[in-house]
Image (tube, rainbow, N blue to C red):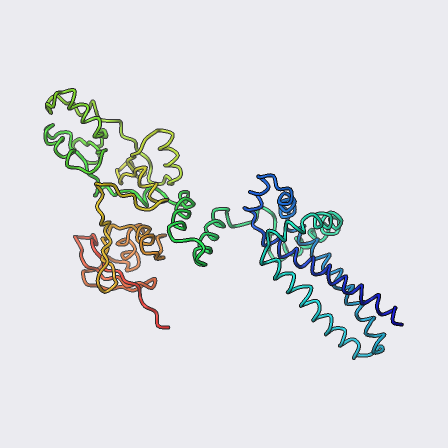
Length: 426
């Protein structure tokens, strides 16, 4: 009688160990870092290559693990029932005790313990179990294939598509989510987060969102006398200045400071001998819908650093430079001619006095805020969009957990706003 009980008990504990193996493998192989495994495989790590082979088809992998786990758990429960029937007889007591004991054993030793160990070291655990799991997946492949067909057909009844090309999230979305998550956990600092997000968002931003508006462009009228043009060019902090004739929309060329200095040298310093139409460079026009990634690629191909932005009718909207795009990645780049004040002035009460033409993206990046930039580019545009009107000086608005007070207005343009976060009562 004793031997008849000992063998099933030993078998039950063996099955519980297998269940723990399957549970830990499931957790490790679903939590493993694909990026790290890819790097290790590239470095020649055979164990990482096995892990990558398994996780390429997660549906098949999970199917094999669940099949094996359910088989051993059910078999262990059946054997436990037989053991307790032999001890207590065929009664409700035997069934209740067997259920309680197996539930505790499976929960503690076959589920929580192995999964806790796997989630603590998912990469190492995954590489350790991968060689065995490859054989498990291979052996159960015919059954899991049938299960996959049944599951997909059943889910389609409810409109759920789990095919490989049904993923609504792009790789960029996943990377952005990972960066934000690690930043919220304190493992990535703000500067690194901004840099990574800036690089990932180049495809989502258009040049119209970061361009210098036409009202802020320094231009030179070619019909002015040469001495005045040179004086304006030398006073400017920019090395490239658009030249226009008759109207600012009629850009005929771009004057580069180096070309101007070279022409002055050749003319022995005589401004009247310079022909600006000859030394001006051909203007480079781009549509306002061009993405930053497309424009960055175009700058590199054309070896340009400066482009004029036009709308669908060819009207001048603004200009964008290579530096503007790079600043979306690395943050503000200041040189000896840049103003240290970029339109955002902290106030003693903790609020900010913000120029109306400051972009929402720049303000969010500088203050680590989350003001929406889907409907407007500038902070003034956001207020106008939310107010559905052009506010008067002194008006106060509250939205998106921030308070906005209009400080200055010029005609229909809001030129200064006081912005402060609304403190939420705990």
